[in-house]
Each structure stands twice: as structure tokens, then as C-alpha cells.
Length: 384
Image 1 (cartoon, rainbow, N blue to C red):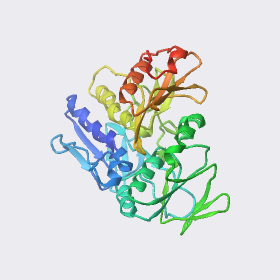
Image 2 (image 1 turned 90 degrees about the vertical axis):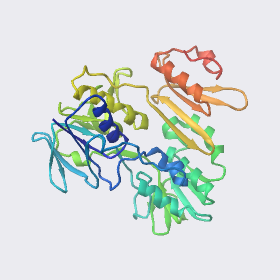
Image 3 (image 1 turned 120 degrees about the vertical axis):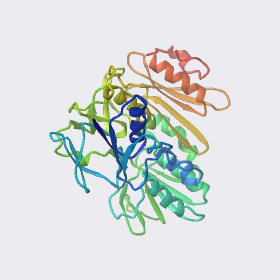
Image 4 (image 1 turned 30 degrees about the vertical axis):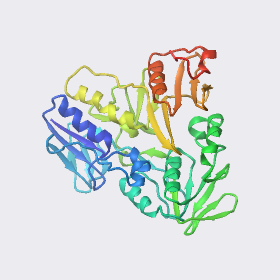
């Protein structure tokens, strides 16, 4: 039996490891679009951008007998013939794991813009972050905040253009986002304005203003990398639609990580979970199925973190725009945020510089807790 894995990121590497760990003895082929072996992406806008960390994963592909083919991007998929098309020719499979991740959204205008998605992107930006460099960030997003932190530390002059009314407003809502404005005090933060296009000298705003820049970084989001799957017959809605076992509409094809829209029994809805932790744990479920075990649902409580402006933010769960926001206050300026749905269920929680609080929140969400509304506002009170 041959398993082909398309994608050279964490999910691809973990798929190799978990298949072998569960006793799979067949052939495994890993197709990686980049010239590099799979590496860790979250540090690219954190420690790696400051030159403090090697992001290479420690997977020993030789020891695992993996046929790794770098610089081999998938260009198409023929599910009827069970073949992945590449520039070097078709690759046949008995089972296919798609882990192609997501691609950054590009801004209108010239290609004079960086989106920190690959290790080469991170290295290219790091070389440009020197004292006095004028950096324009588009998007006061998670990535935007992390890049701003690194740029300021390097002595660069940073301007951030955010279309919404507050940093992280799109992800966390305006009420919560406004609490982060003070963190951006060293940045020329422009809220409520858009970018018309990236120019040869900087960016042109929707207001008509031109802002000069030595470096322009786009941090306006990503989309699942599914363009190569056109005509494959797989069900695609934003990303590749999979069930709770990460199996697609074709029984021989699975998808995991940022590219997958997975069914969540806990939430009773499909989720596009673009988080490192989902890419790390999802391959376990696929390996269980491919090695003949009883299928196990992959439905962990979503989790991710961000390091910005000297703070660590940890978000667990998945909230809807209609959920009630509850700000949890504590002593010494500490605070956190919880989201509650109409039934009183805790759906998500944001912890700031409080790792222990995050652990409790994740357990409470997994247990479908209904916290007491009054006690919830006190950060010292338990959530379950």
C-alpha cells in the first residue's frame, strides 16, 4: 500500500511520524512544494524573525523510510485514477493525505510586498529590518502584531493600516480589540482606513494619501490552498470538506490542517481551524483509520497563541459573532475574555499572560461548562 502526503508543513511531517508509529509498513511518499524539508511555521513571525530560532522540524525521514520529494508541488488531482499530478509527472497513491495548508492573500498593486508564510519570506523580511527602515504593515492582525513587535525591536519605523475599528477586531470583535490599542503606542496605527494598492514607493490609501515604505508586509489573512484541486471532484467550501475522521468526499483521500474544513461533533458545525495545534494532532486520527483501527473523531478544542508587544495571548475554543462577550477582570491589571452562547455554554476564552488560566478554560470548554454569569467576570473564579 502506498500513502502519498501532499504538503511540506507540520501536518505533513506529523502524518509520516504517526503512520509509522502505528505500525504502517507500506510506502510513504511526501511531496513538498518548497525546496526545504518540512518546518514549523508559527515561529516565522516570532523568534525566527528575530534570528533566535531554527524552525526545522526534527523528523528523521531516513529512519522512517520516507520518500521525500522537495520542490515538488502538486498541480492537479485525478481521484478516479488515484494520481497526483506534478511537474515531474504523476504520482500514484492508494491513500492520499492533503496537507497543503493555506496561501496568503495578496494586496492589489505591485509585487513589492511580503507575506510571511514561508521560511524564505521570514529570512527576506529579517534582512530588511534594520534601524530606520520604514515598514508599513497592512492589517493589525495576529501576524501584523507579531511583525510589528519584531520590527520595533530592530529599530524600524512602523506604520500599520487597519481597515477595521480596532486591532484584532475581525478575530475578536471591536469591544475586545479596542483594549489592545495601547499596546500599539509605538506604531503609527491608522484605523478605519483601507489600502487601495501597493506601489513602487509604498502604499496608496483609500483616502488618497500615499505612505512611503521601504518594506510593505501584508497581514490580511490566508486562504486554504485548494486551487490545484480544481476538477478533482472533492467537495470544497472555503477548504476541503472532511468529516470528523478527516476523510473527504472520496474515501481514499483525507485532508488535515489549514486546508481542511472539518466537521466538529462538539460544535455541530464545520470548522476551518487554521491553528498549529490542529495540524499537529489531526494526523493521529488519519493514521488510526489507515492502519485498520477503529476510526477516532478528531475534534479537539481549538487552540492557538500569539506573542506580541511583550505579551502572550492564548485563545481556546471557537466563538460566533452572536456570542456574548464577558471581560474578566483581575488584580494588577490582568484581564481575560470569555464568550458565552445563547444556551450559556462557554464557547471560547482568551488568556493574556496567564497560561494556567488557559488550561482551565480549555478543560471547561471540552466539558461543555455553563459558568455562572456573575462569577465569570472575576478572573480568579473557576470556569467549570
